[in-house]
Amino acid sequence: MNELEPRTASASRVIFTRPMTFLDANGLGNVHGGVIMHEVDTAAGTAGARHAGGPCVTAAIDELSFSAPVHVGDLLVVTASVNAVGSRSMEIGVKVEAESVLDGARRHTTSAYLVMVAIDAEGRPRPVPPLLAETEDERRREAQAEIRRQIRQERRSRIGAWQPNAS
Image (cartoon, rainbow, N blue to C red):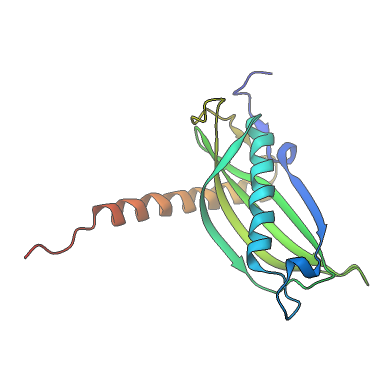
């Protein structure tokens, strides 16, 4: 397969499921945010590697929002999908849900957007295939990812250009 042949978001989507135990939680029975962050990063890296056809590293986390707690005994369901692709990087959207093992009910607990960079054998950034958005939802996510990319660029420009007042 040609390295730069477009690939679909569905081809790289991953879903991880893992039970949450006391080792993952604080004394109140809530799963530590760092445990969830680890699963988010792992899922994003896996989706990125699937799309890029090789290893990826985390370059940025645009957003990581916790909207509900995850408890000991819940199944953590982590879904990651490529939202948009640049020349050497990809935005990966990650959704985390907690599933009750008692009744199967799921609740959305966490959302995240990560920028992953594909790397070659020497650890240098390498080109990634374009994304082929097939559905209206994928096109929406791609457009929203472009807005986040513009905000990242503006933030870097504004912070990088800031100079303290010279007296």
